[in-house]
Image (cartoon, rainbow, N blue to C red; front, side, top):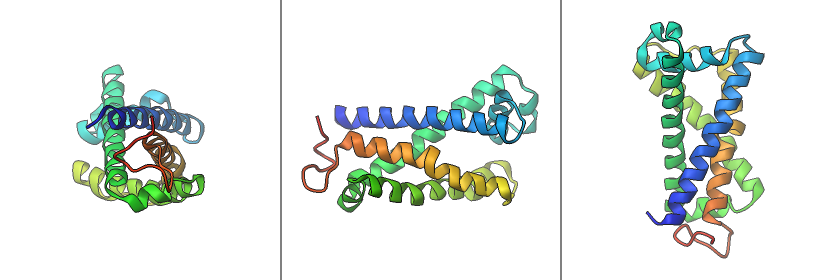
Length: 169
């Protein structure tokens, strides 16, 4: 992996990790009258079980670390797709294309997480209600958009000048 692609990966990953962490924390506090700690203990509970909700700072940190791993994974997936697909690079070469791809990729991420990854880990089926639909929309703007925009920027994609193997300087 060349330095430019590595740099794109790290910048996109850290951007999505921060944006989504702030969004999830704010949503939990403002909309659901929770606490920031409880939000990230809830994430930790996916792998540690319900006792994580009483785990204190340790489980907040575990939830945050898990969030970083998930953000990294979805960033790698999208960057890999962009590197492999000239068509995808052409689409994300414009702001409209970035938004269109985000509108597809965000729900794909949430549907995969909520119907496959989390149920496989917890043994519990997803609850599809109002909060689930909020996450569909939120993943478009607070997960996919930062990933897609940062990857597009990092690869320096334009329809005519660059390929994924020739990132902008």
